[in-house]
Amino acid sequence: MIRIALFVCPQTVCSSLATADDAFRLANQLAGEPLFQVQRFSCDGRPVDIGMAEVRVDGDLALAEAADLVVLTATGPAVDKTLAANQSLLPWLAARPDSQQLASLCSSAFLLAASGRLDGRRATTHWALAPAFRKRYPQVWLEPDALLTEDGNLFCSGGAQAGLDLCLYLIGWHGGDWLAQRVAGAMVFEMQRGRQSRFAPLLPSTGSDDPQIGPLLVWLQRNLAEPLDLEALAAQAHCSSRTLLRRFKVATGLTPNAYLQRLRISAAQTALRNPARSLEQVAAQVGYADRATFAKLFKQLCGETPGAFRRRLRGGC
Image: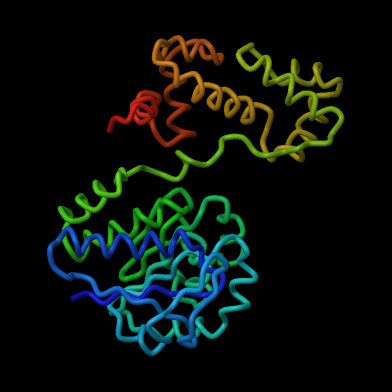
């Protein structure tokens, strides 16, 4: 029997804990035998108030030492608060033997990294937390586009639903792919969902108060399919090309051309929801003269082809 210990602290995201617990217990049910022993632990062995409920645990760090797999369930975006509140966990994680599997779900990659266990190793976390993670832990080989990573006995997952991707992967690791597939089917969940880039927003949230750039972004929304160049945009913003480049980058983090391409592909994602429109029509609608150029950029930004995106919306594979 594989012994699994789920970490619980006051910052634990309730849905993450419940998803992990459900996945492994459902695996036992579908396997027809108790393949996994699932237990919960806290640093001191006391019940934990996670806001929505008080979670009972089965023991403290000593209990988790005997586990084959320790899972750090997601702890939310307040990273500094989580690290400060769980200092006693870090040296314990650092002392875990290489033979013990350690897995972090979403933001809990910060805990694993803070312990030093991810130094020089592959890891991932939620795409929105990636810049802060990379700045804090430059020694970790971060792959923010990956839904999950595996490096030896260290496993990480990206956003909330990617936690289930990782649990299914670990179920397959210990119980076989057939079991992971059955659990995914019972939970009505699509496995092998690609990259995190499929879910990250294409456009930055600017909220720009710049009196020239703010109105220009609104104008671009209305004229995204028009043939535009830097000079045309500068004229619309009533400034020089050099000034536009500088102020646009400050306001959006992107060049005008990069922003325009993302704006067009974002509009294409909406247009692709209409099954009556062909890919060629969608490409033309958002400003691309040929389907090949459109498809290449769409895959570059979205991590999948326009056709695959449309099939996924229809519930296809």
